[in-house]
Image 1 (spheres, one colour):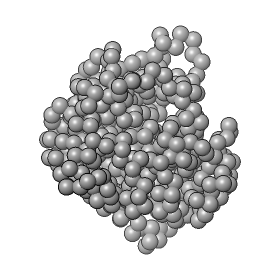
Image 2 (cartoon, helix red, strand yellow):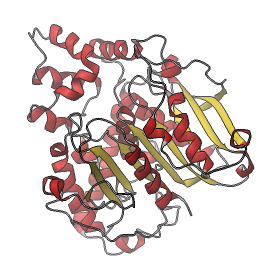
Image 3 (cartoon, one colour):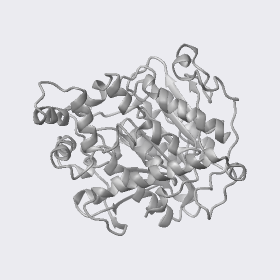
Length: 433
């Protein structure tokens, strides 16, 4: 069984709700703090220590967690056992719909000249991504090293994972921190170039992939939506979140076994929207992702069903729900349709693998959740239960600086320049020496 999902050494996290500020950490936002932070500390010290996170296996130094190991209470031991069981069960679900497991292998690839966007009017510029802090390096393009490759993560066409890696040439003999970037729905890895270049300029190995049925893994503008409908009809794939989570576990295999330039204890992961969800679930599944920043991705799927707030998320992939509505003999998409679709295409998404369980499983690794305060796809009220469980876990672990949730006021489902800068600060704080 894959070791990344068997490591139960997971003390919990901390939480605060914060607002826009030019200086990080952000300050507490009083007009929304009562929604999310009423059982958590309302403010944190203005600076956090740089900590070592080389404690993800028994063979590695556990400088932060050693103090908690020696005085672990029965309740904490039980909580760690629960996380272990959660990972085991999640891995079992991920493996249940593989086309055939194969040894990880690498194939060369070429740069993509015309990346596929599954949108009628593809975007051409992102103000938010271009706001990412970037080092001023003369002749930057000449010093930038770009790699394209495929990882074979399972049998079949979708088991060919396109990977794009940017780093600086003069640092190739040094082990550096790495950050994995994940695109949003209908986009591709090439869309993320501004972020990859910015992080590479600052000394990171910057990595992007095409999610399942996106980019090089798509053949036309409806590939992703078609895959979702097929998953509903046949139940043999999990194109919404879980298949890409499998790929990200395999990517961690590659980064920790075949990359001499990557510091295996300093690998971060982040993404926007769909990519934010991918980052969340990959980090819950695999502790080799040491620092985690999901952007406009974390939400409560069960909460949305129970509180009739599912529409905004569901309508982003409406065709599969319309197909299910017809199959179920319904006159419209309702809560029953939503629940049945989630359970079919991503088993456990609205139950045992939802945010109240998988968000705490990321602890004690540094986790920054960045959402818009008015985001209808990720309502803040839907994070109340994950927040309360995270707060309890954080208090038990005494890990005050390792968790933060930022809700940017007045922002809906949109990644902003502020969010990109906060993510950048978070990675620098915990991954840079």
